[in-house]
Image 1: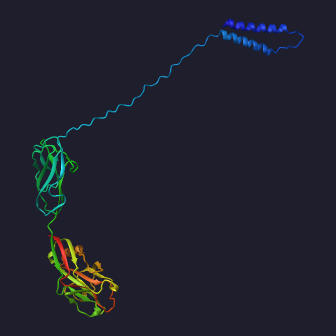
Image 2: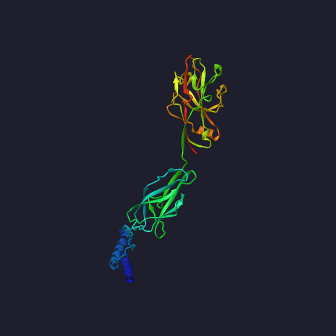
Image 3: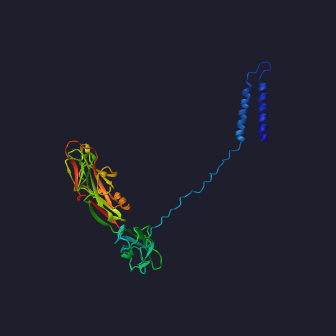
Length: 368
């Protein structure tokens, strides 16, 4: 390298001397000094090119990549049909469907049908009471031998409770080791039940309207007419006076009873002309309480409207709630009044609904 630099400086000095010798001293220079330095530079560049060592090839290692990541292998388990030893299936109620009604203290037999859908034979298995209402049933009852796939009817003797109401008792099956087994299709997959309703037996009676001076017709005071017993009219008469009919039923035998149904039947009554239209507008059926015997003072007695009639009723009229109220009050009579909804039409023609004293009936269903 030292020899190279020495060579460069000698070359530049030689060039300067040559330039000085070739030019006359009294004339201006004709050669551009820059050309001299350019030539010198080119000469030096050529020398450097020859003297420089050949370039050394440089290699770089590729970046180290992380090892590839592979998704975990998912192993799908193979389904196996492992048999279950103890498993029952509820099939149906053979007797006493849910909600069956019994009178208090009534003995009955409940039977269920079940199927052994397990792999083990039922031997030494028992029916056992689980929870709810036992209904005087045994704590346990043996079940005969039942092979897998076989159906069996399992029965237990029960007795309805003494008090009215709804009752349910749950039962299960216990194996010979004392383990309660599951029941497919049963309640919560483990039990089956008996469901009953206890209700006292009902009695139905039909009462006719009481005759004599208890049922009949009372006219408006302006008519100046005495009550008529035996014939029940509701409407107006030819003299254009209004008439109201009263019906009395003897309910003294119902004291302390629970009424489950009560229907008033007026379908056998009749009509004269038309008391259901015009100014009369229809006939009201209402419940009243009047003192006996029936007299003029009962014409304007307060009552409770039940139904407005626009024709002779073909259907029976429900009076259960009103009748139960009178029974609870200890009344001996249940009384009905029929009266026109509006004033007389003033046409001088009788328009009324008519019932004989024994025609209206009251059909009652009750429990003791």
